[in-house]
Length: 96
Image (tube, rainbow, N blue to C red; front, side):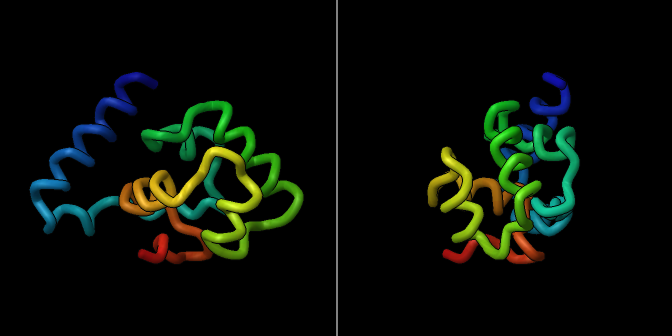
């Protein structure tokens, strides 16, 4: 798990300096991703992933505002970072 997080961090850091590679990051749909897929994103630890999965089990997230409202711990800054890492809500990036 540590190696996967380290690899993700390296990809993010490298993509920050190489804009062309940013498009190669695979999109991860929050309404369909597994626990392991969600935990692979830096910034999503086990507790936050559990809150996401609990809320998603009640009803799929309709958009980023819905995700942020229902999941404690995801604010505008973390949502923007997660979106840059490939997290999507109904296929959409976090709006700037």
